[in-house]
Image (cartoon, rainbow, N blue to C red; front, side):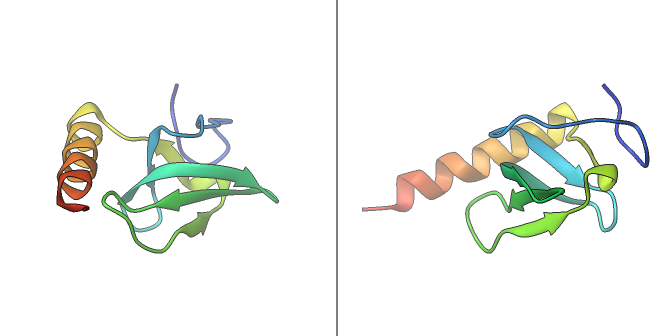
Length: 77
């Protein structure tokens, strides 16, 4: 799969993707109203990204995001 404008890439909910507009990595939370909703690793406010601006996160970014999520989960009571 490849991302970028007009690529037709549609991420699966729960995977990590990159917003090519600013390079942020986020976990795909939903696909709604023509937007991909992304949440930063470790929590925070979700943001909307047009589908044509989303591409798969590379393996190193996915690993970094998962470690951030695991560290966050360990800090919760």
